[in-house]
Image 1 (cartoon, rainbow, N blue to C red):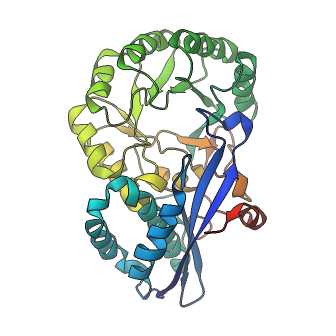
Image 2: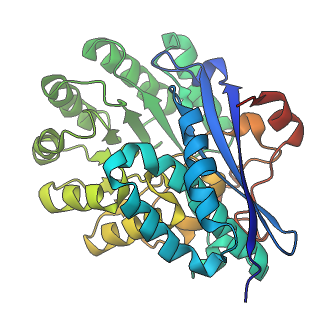
Image 3: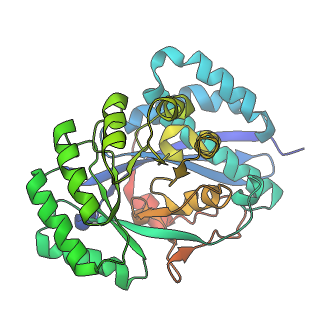
Length: 361
């Protein structure tokens, strides 16, 4: 029987983003870390994050609600606690509770792995395999054209076989010029994607998407606000370039609604935002049952574990949103990455950076 959870604590980190990662006005990421300790002295970590305000509320949700509910319990009790907490907080709305639940859920799965001396992927029933990784983040829309091209080429020099570029903060015609310049620079064989971060109108998304097909882009990501299911259905039906959604969808029911009502073929859940490892795995399985692919959003050090147990996972995304507080990052070897064999998720935090960016609550 696993040891009981004896302590649940949170800390808020405000971490500056590298200038080349900044987009749409965001220059800092707020990271909420959750630390679990059990009666044997094992310590596990979970986390969530936001590029906006309000992360302190997430800490309070954990400190005042979730933490007290699970102290004294064991990790194999988590499923029942999770269901009850979700039911009890339903009227607060999913978007408020989901980040807090995600951070604790990730910590619980980390503790499960540590208690059983197994990597997270093994706890999830997966086996280690190599997964292609793509570079994401350096292709910011805040960069000038020449720097955008240089940063994209830099990903290729660093061993990434595919690259994603940001769009949506400029006019569609200027974005098209930038996307064409990157394609010309990297050549026709390199897979390229574009992320619009919910910035386009339906008309502009149709205009840009139709031209991306000629440039050989693999997908257009979140062209519309995530809640516009009908608009995404129109895009997926009318564009040749695939449409990808998911980083802003919360929980399996929102994904299931998309699956039922749109022909979108690429889903991008983020375990730190959508409900933790538990929910992200459910979403991956839903996508597989619907013959859709899943490409987990960001956080490669965590999502590699979920990708190797999901046969419909095509890529891991490397957006360095946590890099400022990590002592080790997942780096490509021959264009692919494999999960670490350390117990739990195996994320190695930089204790000095964590202390430097920790905020008083």
